[in-house]
Image (cartoon, rainbow, N blue to C red; front, side, top):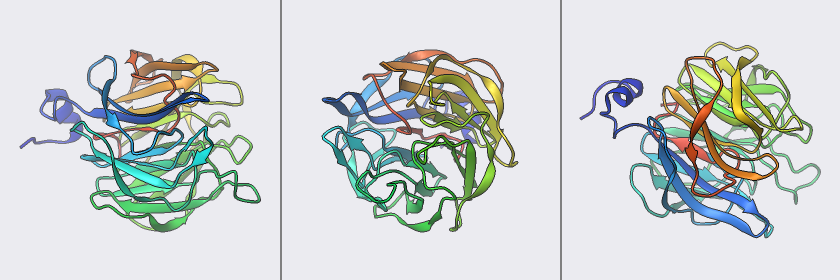
Amino acid sequence: LPTGDTASRETTGTYNAGTRGIFGGGFSGPSTHHDTIQYINIATLGNAIDAGNLTQSRYANAALASDTRAVWGGGTNPSPATYNIMDAVEIMSTGNAFDFGDLYATVYYPGGVSNRTRGIYAGGYNPSDAPSGFKDNIGYITISSKGDTQNFGDLITAKNSYSTFNSPTRGCFAGGASPSKINSIEYVTIATTGNASDFGDLTVARNYGGGCGSAIRGLVGGGSDPSANNTIDYVTISAMGNAQDFGDLTSARQEIGSCSSATRGVFAGSWSPAKTNIMDYVTIQTTANAKDFGDLVNIGVMQEMGTSNGHGGL
């Protein structure tokens, strides 16, 4: 069996030849939304590979994962329809997703964080719900067993379209809209239940950014402020405080999917304003501008649809 932590196993090639990043769904136009599941090997550069399909074609869902299983919750398509479904796959296999259970509400653009055992979804938006439609719910699941979300607590601010990153102990929710742009970062302790607490602020109020990180450092790349930007922020997850500048994406864009290994963060797809299939990457421990990684199978994978079996929460 492999030995060592995720970073050392990825470096030596004994961890299934590197951490796998996985994306589900997407949106390319009013009549073109996707159920595609696609994956990359984060340790190597290259284009994404088709791995199967979600149970429902949609975008604006939230992704989280253990070291073996990925789960997507919520989402919408331009029918219009909004969903509370959760889909799951075993990350190192290919094939179609299976039904996992139901989210706490019918929403799109929620967010997800996780450690090895527990997944947490929060927030989201449903235009049919008065008065504002923005949600402050936080719900949790046990990733190894199917079932509906259970109540965890509440966000400080009801919001959607924010960015997420996590360590094994702490999950963070950065930026978003409610409906104005937000620069605040909130956090929860994953193993407990309770309301979110204030962490600090991003360098600029924005939503639709991609969030990823290692167990030590969380990153937010791109987003809308309200124009598309290329800024990458970072924080130290264990130490509360405001974000600092990390570098820039290869281009200004928003509605970005993302995933990470213990050492590398990937920002994928966008709307800037055209839909794209580009992927950028950075080395998380350093500060520098992003570089080209490869291309997605489909254009327009949008916001919080990516995760991996080696992210910072593991």
